[in-house]
Length: 323
Image (cartoon, rainbow, N blue to C red; front, side, top):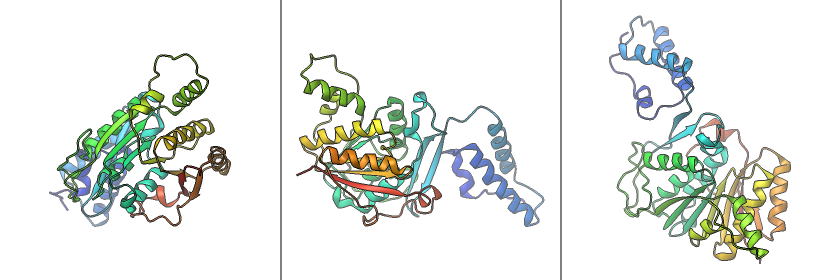
């Protein structure tokens, strides 16, 4: 039968378009459903969408797409993501979707008391999903600082914040994000972004320890880290995939512990037992106290229906300064 009104899920790509392959697959499934029901006529809008999706799939590669998570009947989160890993010009691996990022976001939403009224810093914030969840807490942090080494990744992160009605550098927000009616607190945290490179910070730490002659400040280094001010809680997700970066990451966390920070939470997808072992060895070397709390930590189920998270094993390390 003719379909004068397309269902809502087929209208969504207009505002936040997913991957063309995904759109094309959904449209083909819908057309097959009509044919199996005995339909012989198709709505012009539907056929135009099918033609557009097929042509797009054969044309220029789509570098970015949106993925919209309907986390409840009242709330959705839309993320602009990179297709594949890409290079630095597209934001690198940070603007992909990673299992531990979803896991950390669920942990944030299930543990509001750990963050309410605090100053929270995320290292390697990537696409910003955890920051969005922090900003939407009913009793949010006082300040949220989202950092990444890639300026392009931060540009896309800031776009994701805007899409989800999270205002940068402001303490009040009236919206609810991505068409959501999710109820928000009247006063929201001050949210900011900054370039931060852990390896550059570690080089600066080493030079300061050796009392070398002062150099011009390096972008993303110790001076930029100091400019962020003191923080209470440190977060990170899927930032432990490279041994070289693990050492630099933990050196930055140790530096922040020495200033004020009381606790860090690192979500790490278990892809290599050797990498997890190295992470634990480095935390021990730096005198940190740590425990995997993934099994016992409460989480609000936001993404449980997505296979990406269902099939993953994620450790969540609570890390504190050594006594």
